[in-house]
Structure formats: C-alpha cells, structure tokens
Image (cartoon, rainbow, N blue to C red; front, side, top):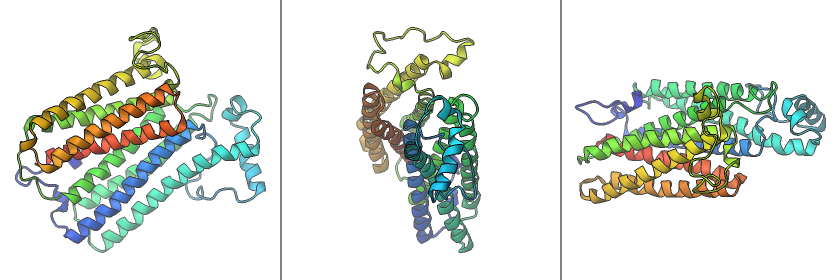
Length: 360
C-alpha cells in the first residue's frame, strides 16, 4: 500500500519532508478530528443496525438529505413512503408515526454525520492547499481519502437498497464491504497522522521479529473485524449465546451444511459465529504472546514500541471482554456499540504499534 512506502536511505514518511512543524501540527490536528468523526460514524452505524433503524429512510438525497421533516405533513409523507417498504410490511406492520420517528432519527443522524465528515474534510483541505501548508506528496494522498469517502457514501446507499426490494434485510456482503471501506479510510488517515506527529525515525533498532510480528497482528486484527461484519450482517450474535462452548458443543453441528461449501463462511449463522470466535481467540493469544516477547526485549525497544505493546494488550483484553459480554447478554445495544468501538480502538493500537516498528 502506498502509505506504507518508505525510502531506504531516509526512514521517515517522505510526505512530511518539506512541511514546517507548525503546518504538521495543524494538519495532524485536522486529520485527528476527521478520524474521531469516522470513529463515531462507525459506532453510530452499529447502533443504527442494532436498533433496526437502517431501512427507515427509503430514499437517498445526497444534496438535501440533511434536512429532516419539519412539520407533521412532511412527517406523514416520509412515513407513507416507509409504509410501502418491505420492512414495514413484513416486520413493523402496524407501527405508528411515533414509533417510526424513533428509528428514523438514528438513520438520519448517521447520514448527516457522513455529510458532515465530508465537509470537515474538504474545507480545511482546500484551506491548507491554498495556504501552501501541504507538501506535494501529501496532496494526492489526501485527495484519494476524499474520493474514498465519496465512494463510501455511494456504497452505503447500495447496501441500504438491498433491503428495500423484497427481503427487509441488507446484504451481509454489502454491509461488510461498507464496514471494510470505513475501516480502510480510518486506518489510512490515522497512518498519515502518525507520520505527521512522528516525522523523525526512531533512533533505535527494534528486533526485526517484532516488526514482522506487529504486521501479522495488524492483518489478524483486520480480518477478525471484517469477520464481525458478517456476524452483524446475518445477526449471528443472537445464536449460541454461551461461552466458551457453542451450546453444548465445542464444534457445533451444521457447520458445513450449505452447498457450495464456501457459502457457509458467509451465510451460515453457525459457521460465521464460529469463525469469528476462532479468529478473535487466535488474535488475542497472538497479541498476548507478542506482548510477553516484547516485555523480554523491552531494553532494546523504543519508548513508542513499548507503549504500543502495552496499549495493544489492554485494547485486546477490553475487546475480548466486551465481545463475550455482548454474546452472553444477547447483544444489547449499548454493549454491541461498545464492542464495535472496541474494535476500532484495537485497530488504532495495532496500527500505532506497527508504525513505531516500521520507522525504527
């Protein structure tokens, strides 16, 4: 990936070479704000899904969709459109206007926050660009992030459309793609932030095994989070609400009952939950093993690498605890949202750790 590129004779992100310290700090603060808003966007998206609100808005208006119904007539018109949707007719038949409002506001807030993120990104980007505060290599990187954000909006509507035809449930494939792109944008901007905040290479040679290990952990954490998208997409978390066994079995029955076999990985509730459990468990123990080895090598580690190792273990313990609690309590909204936030915190920690090893 382009943002992992590093020069062999200058081990630092080359997009910060020509930027002043003041410009770096201001651009970093702006991107941190964007990352925080994306973090909130992902969590709000989880709440929208958990509350069954994602299909409450049956139209997409990119230009004027930030204006809610302002009077009872407009509310009645919006509600009438919803009453023609499969979700109302098959799931929420008989829902009154007040009940509709309770789900509408979650989806409306999610869409408005997405537009707000685009505005908060674009306007400062143009300001910094006009003021000449961005290095030449950084400009295309930021422009690429803006394009990805626009594609994310289109992908979000493509996901919603899958639940507005016959089956009042969005496609788990589209939902996971929507989540994955959000994580990619978040990680991409966060990587740029780390380069801006820590432009100088670490004056210490960290053990190469730990550098490779941190990259492996980044891959494992990412795959585990993506697998959680499929769990959410088919509501697999509402089945087998026991731990560590799934019901009465370590290896549940019916794990390979769909044909062709690959469909079980993405469409079989039993298999999807089992895979997420397995990936989460392997990732947790891999992080614990990494931390133990890093502690033994602490004298040869840079301060940032030591801090990153501790933060990663703390994030992993928190996330596993949230995941198990969410499962045992049948996915309450608050815990489900916290579990999604924990996934982003874990991704942040492992990305920071890898950055510290990458530029040593």
